[in-house]
Image (cartoon, rainbow, N blue to C red; front, side, top):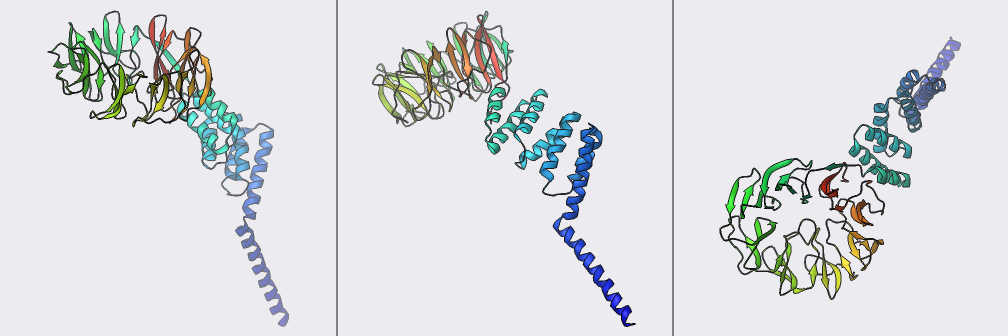
Length: 437
């Protein structure tokens, strides 16, 4: 009897020990690791025989066990997906690994290639940007630079198209006069007009027809008429018309009534960043939207950009003491570096500056970031700068690499993915397919 009791105790101890070992294995994940390893090894055998359709489900099942080997097994699964041609599954897994900061350099490139081939350029570039941030890979940087400037060129029937901020209702000049076109070069408002300004943010523009100026709406309806006979209209600026009468420019309303008789200037620019440049007595000054003087008439010159404005991103290039300086909207020098020649800022990018013979680019600190080497140049906008090489224009990146194969007789900066370039006497619209966010 006593022996039986001892036997029962030993059996109980054995069960408890087995249970403890089972619990220990479960708690440490040893069992999961073994099952996962067995599945992965079986999948590896199928991979050696190129039996992808049998290997892939095994890898996928192995990944259901969350172990330290998951990252490695995911990598093997990606190889199988690619070999099998299942790029949708490949890309989905790479996106997961990118989110977890475990994706490899080549995985980013493979998925980006797949996206670009599928006309998903923006998705591909955003993935590469994430890879650059996470890995710092120079190879990914090079890939990004090589692919981010995809573009198309559409040669229009017009001789001139004025840049606008949004590329809608761009004034365009053709054989019949001025009209308005969209980003594809299609007429939005036929005209024809003898002159045409850009539309303002409220949907008003000034056109000239039959020798008389009118304000119009975007559907072509006349809204106001010039009954005083202004000599010229420079531009729309906010809800004002910049018009010339009695040899002076001033501010007019939509009915061509002067609303700032105390502000009469020899020249005037459109307001931007809350300020505008005006000229009196042969010298330039800076005033606010309300007419307050920021810089008295002490400037020899100001650089005007493609939108008829002096300031962009609160910066302007002005000439004083025969030297060009970068200033802010308070009229203060942003840096003490001066240049012999300069173009106006178009955006927050590099600014074109010259030494009297060649052109290069400066940053906000006054450093020459791209050396003097071009016959002419325009300041950067949307990551690209227009440059003249010989007698042709092209576009370069901030790395000073030419990014557009086409050559142009003339060129304008990019605004909202569109730039204008002249080809054989006609204006072409150059459209970027991707803009960095």
